[in-house]
Image (cartoon, rainbow, N blue to C red):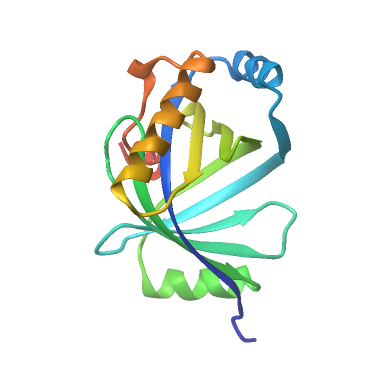
Length: 180
């Protein structure tokens, strides 16, 4: 059995994450804004210890493909810049076994993710096992400082529209939170 990389995507993001009590309230506000619902997915992210950044293998229930995701991100509350590399993997079990032999698993994050799109921003409503409910925003951005600043402001305005309390912003990844 060979391991096939199906695709490669590299991009820069501005993103934020906030803990929320009630995702239904956020859903209602999203409906009022007229966002487009993409779907709901059960995801399992296996994180591996790496010297720099974060590396995870994401499997989506019901799919025979996976994504190997490497990212470097600022650990700050609020909108943060992130550099992301995603490889589409066709044989996830073989690849997961190989990674398990080469690298130590640092965390496993299981979640149900509801995905929406609104004016260039991807919105995730996450129900994360052992952690609770979160809202995440991701917005692709050019690497220049001016555009990163503009995209951060867009996320801050969306946060206000959805009534997300700035005190609930999370600076850590789910893998960091699960290991605490």
